[in-house]
Amino acid sequence: MTLADIRSSGLLELYALGQLDAHGQAEVRVALRQFPELTQELREMEIALFRYADSHGVTPSGNVIDNILKNYPGGTSAPASQPTQAPRSLRGLMSGLFLAAIVGSGVYLWQQRALSSAVASHEEALEECDTKTALADARAARLQSVFSDQYRSIDISATDGYAVANIELLDDQTSDQNYLRIIDLPDLAEGETFQLWSITGDNAPVPMDLFDEKGDGLISVGKVNATDAYAISIEPAGGSTSPNMEKLVGVFAMAG
Amino acid sequence: MRASDPKGLRAAYDKYGRALYGVIVRIVKEPGLAEEILQDTFMKLWTKIERYDPDKSVLFTWLMSVARNSALDAVRLKKYEHQRKTDSLDITVHDSVGNADEGASMDVSTLAKKLDEKYSVLLDLMYLQGYSQSEISDELDIPLGTVKTRLRSAMSQLRDTLREEKSLFIGSIVIVLLILILISI
Image (cartoon, rainbow over all chains, first blue to last red; front, side, top):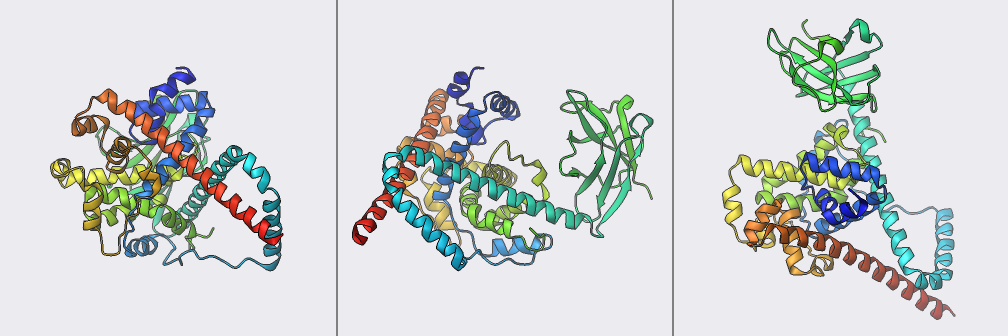
């Protein structure tokens, strides 16, 4: 598809609205990689939709945030964000900026369109900042939890062909998910992915999570209670329904 | 940021909580259940955050997807679907407010008011209530192709309205500054 085709197809709008199936989403992601200028359009749509949803927002009761913070690992409460008094030097700087803004106001009148664009970019940067803050916060909380006593650590028994694999399975005793702590991974060829399997008795291995990169070193995966072992194999992208034993990376023995 | 000081989560909640809750409560029409889903949505910031890719969307889009899917699942689970679909379209605003907790409030801004009604109805159904395009086609008794066309126009008008509001805001600031300059002279 050309750039014009994508724009006229309405796919980008449906993507922003969360109305596309997996195939449609994949199609848009390919287009976003192929035409980077579409990313800006998508961000504008997302911000417009946020504003729309916000304008129709409803205030939940105060209990919700209290419950969230109570259940959030390591957190019992956090005060509502309050404006802080700027230090004197900062106030001086702000006064200077204020004067500069007055001087530049004439230019503002003539460059209104350009400024609108700058405001949009600023909002996008704020979004990105919020996103990164939330990500960092979540990762820190996750790490703190993972290194607590609630996890049992099992090292991978790597197969001969994949001796480089150095992965720890962190078995969560209290929830329905585990983590893979990835120290080293074998290389993947184009179109391949790692796949986790659950093995119980003589039953066929049950396909589980897919991952193709180390990420931040900690990957959340599913959990099967009373499984005998988990295994990791290399499969074609998208995963398989049964493992390729020729590309078995290793096994985590859960017994004992 | 330290894990014991979850200010990032608090900031995300302060910024997105109302918008998400507005959507959830419209879908499930039950404030208590809606608050549980909102709570789960923010907990997923911790438990499922690795599934979020900042290159693919902004954080709100991801949270909205989680919230809306959870709300729709809850509706299906409780077999409220039939009741929901046979309700009047008018319930979208009034019922959710009426059912909400005492402290709940709703503020439909000029952003929404500036949209043509045919577009705001479409966005309300699709974005705020989780209807699919074909469900909207049935509900409004208009062809699916018209839904698609209107949807694109709605998004375009929404973006244009947002740009106009920003320009107006900046213009107002400039005028105030010029008045201040004149007064000081």
